[in-house]
Length: 209
Image (cartoon, rainbow, N blue to C red):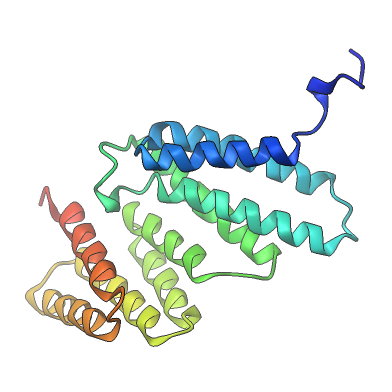
């Protein structure tokens, strides 16, 4: 097949933007079942571009890795049941999400830009997989990576939630509720939103107890 065929040439910037626009629309429609496969295609394309980029072009590699990290994060976020707003998420998809979270963190490390979100999503998926020790470790790293106090309070809420889920007791529930209340007060703009996410996750992971 001729190498000069237009259909075989790399995806253009315009086509790339169209794909990104499609993903935005799928998110608006709450079609995680369609969003994830499209995001996987986008991730594979970005990883292929990374492989084809000369190692001396550090600026381009960093840009591509950060983009791929964001795409992997999106896959992980759309396959985490703790939001409780995406319907039933099959176990296979949850496993994919855990893997995507790990990929996001690896890409972040390669780009020398390990973010709060990359750490948090790993903690969230380890919690979902009942790997509680690993979840606490990631949430501690999330707390330590937070730039502001509100981020640290948010991470503390997830730490207390995880400790409660390991072996629920009244004392642990009291500490969790205190951490959530502190989060609400500490962040006037987003505290209530983040507190409700923790409360929703608590409901999700104790619903069948």
